[in-house]
Length: 314
Image 1 (cartoon, rainbow, N blue to C red):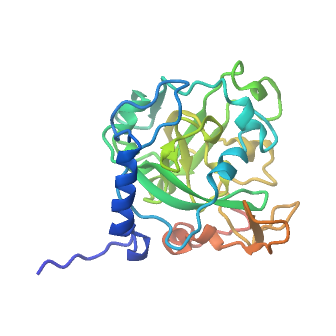
Image 2 (cartoon, rainbow, N blue to C red; image 1 turned 90 degrees about the vertical axis):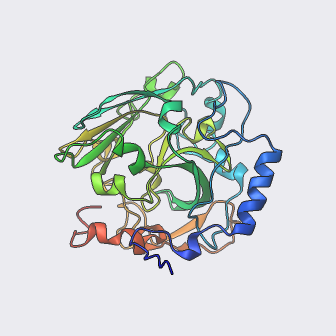
């Protein structure tokens, strides 16, 4: 008899898509003209296309937010400051062709096209809670590959302790980059163990389709236990770093936005409480929900922060 021993980072049985749901989804995708992982993705300006993906860990028992809500209520300051502005202002953005530069403290730096980044990997769908610092949240089925699987291809050096990310800088199509509302281009960073954690996802789609422009096309980050501003969009460079990288919000206002940005109901933002949240789509009279420590993923990631002062390293 073969006995399989689960490792600490393996998905729990409750997080695996049921065979029934998987087969139904596969049939639906085939009927809809799926785009196979590794096959050609839609050209710039093409209509929404579906992605094919494998059965994977996902959020058991989570009610997925309405797709219309999730794609029309966005933070993407490169296009607009309000929530509905990015969907309107990003229509002229053309996310393909696209390439990403990978460098820094690694043995195999290089420039890769978007397709070459994706082709060696099997796409996965993962339903994750997504929490914004303004006390609203949503539940989204993201499609992508574990970031750690991608990063290993570039053989990071032992001295690499962080991973730094940068967004496209193109003021002609991203109008807010002509202003000084933030320091452009947008930058973010993770500690190496955060970046390599199996929950961290490099995302190429949502709701079974390629990412809309306003949601960070063609390539964005999702770190489900952190606030949304850590989940950088439209990524053009990834660097392995020996020192903690500068990040946009912690540079703009270090008193309010720390490097870690872990969802923590016990650590208030200086101007509001983080203890409760409203789910996108809830009515005005729907009671707010209690915020979960590390956005509900504490059993998987709390060990990364053992012994840290959560009030100082926020």
